Length: 79
Image (cartoon, rainbow, N blue to C red):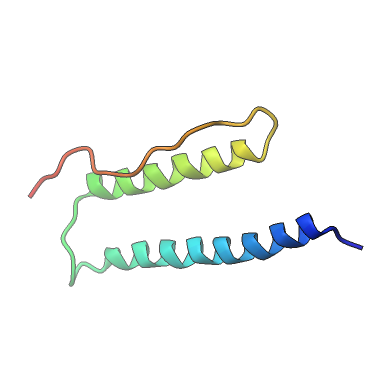
């Protein structure tokens, strides 16, 4: 038998993880060079931000939680 808190966790986790996966796939759509122009530097910034956030997520589920987060912006906007 499962608890109400566990059931709520599963319900919300499935919704949020599926939403995150969908969003990551949309970011992947930006790789289409016929529609977008970008540099390796910009791609590295995107991937780096996502990797940092994933590391923070893993830490939150481990003993010794991490507090705070940082929104993503490119370090410099180039044309």
